[in-house]
Image (cartoon, rainbow, N blue to C red; front, side, top):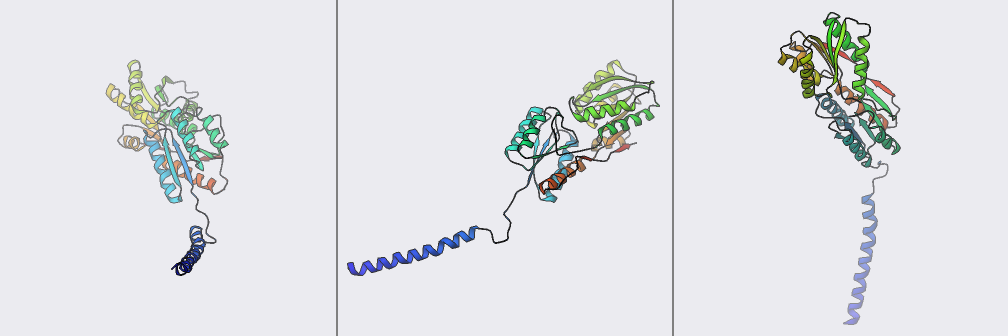
Length: 312
């Protein structure tokens, strides 16, 4: 019995060794890519938006998403809700995720400088959209010419009011490049116009509700206002509500951005005009630029987006 079992056990053991020797190389080969097949890579782009509580930036995001899908890019969108500290934390999270490019629409152009430097130090390209970054260098800036848009608004408003009268300027978020540049452009258009007086210039933070309340307060002491320029359409629409509620007639209201609601108000004859940026195009161009950077291409330092005036 012992002499019979011993050779049998030896035979079984040898067969097992042969089977194992065949299985090893086959399993290893199956886990490796075929010769000539590139290793899989993932391209991700972060989109740090100032706020998605504004139709302009919702449209910008949608333009970016559509282009990301077309380009095969993974887009990670984060919303700062107009909070600079939250945006800094959002961008730090994108840095930790090791995205290839960050597209940033700053909530505060000054406040984000430090985190933009962190991103570039980590080897991540940064592209600013609509609003610039102060105090840190970005690879590219994509925006409409806000100063030219502000001046365009001033020229149109002057024409509509006959070059004279009391006007109001509703400003955007203090510290944002859009507010600063649109204001500079608007006031440059008023230079030398001695028959025009800016009776009030107050921030309403690009917000419709604040535009309403600020305009209500202004109208309490200035019933003879003939024109309003708001740094964005949300504030313009809020101001329009305040003007209607106060029963003040024939006030020329000009906004900025050409959002859907504002364009509808222009068509209805309630708003006089809005400077048309193209947020969907800004978002699209942002992702296009990011893809070029991922592919190792060079891009322009400043990429302009055309402006138009939507008017009655």
